[in-house]
Image (cartoon, rainbow, N blue to C red; front, side, top):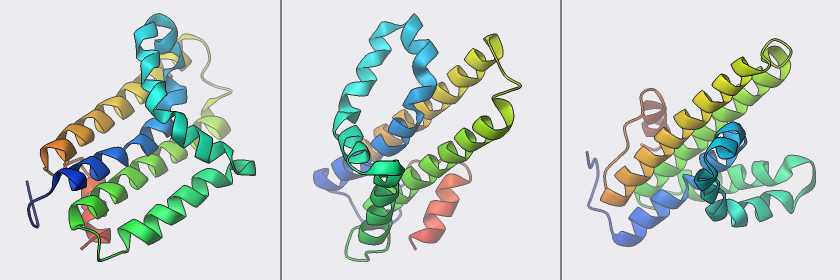
Length: 160
């Protein structure tokens, strides 16, 4: 569904590129699948520039800096088309969900989930991220808004 105006090719490309953020945040969960299916490791190559930016700042401040820049300079900037702002906010929210999952795993589930259960959990999370990002990128490339339950609604509320 196109809510506002038509989108240009540049808008579509920019809206698709922001989904590299949640893919970067979820790529570590794919380690078991990368071992079983080496072709999947090609997903890491588009993330190299983002990894460079993230690693340029110590103590994980790179991800915080990217978040602040995208939120202030893109999401809250009324001069940028709504399509780009919406997709940027949606990518940020997907990254936040992945961060929460990582915290829950690290503090609660890590001692409880080992071996096969860990592999199943990681594969499920990675495939969920891959499906959400793939769907969002395809919809953005088509010039349509990706409808992900709850996350799209929250993104729309932030970018009215």
